[in-house]
Length: 125
Image (tube, rainbow, N blue to C red; front, side):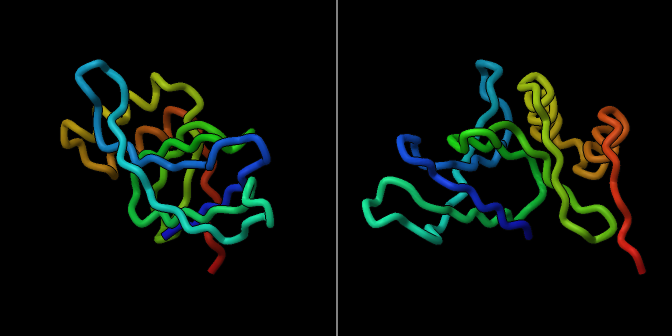
């Protein structure tokens, strides 16, 4: 499990995390909301901190965070939960299509690691 913490800035809408579960007929990713917990709120209620628990590997979209928006691919490598960002929506849609067609998550993970040249640090024993 991963926990992501995002701050809601004054004047911004509440941060959100969506789990991408496939592709809609329009070609856009299909989402389901990831619930959040408010960990701190200002006295006026106009800003605060939110925590999102990511319980399963997959593709997630993050928004309303001022500078951390975009897609994140969550996976396990050597039994450690990790994520890497996908900056292009076209890449995210390709991953959503592969997930929807039943391609194994392990195959998608290895393909993305190779394609994007993600450096994965190994845990010291």
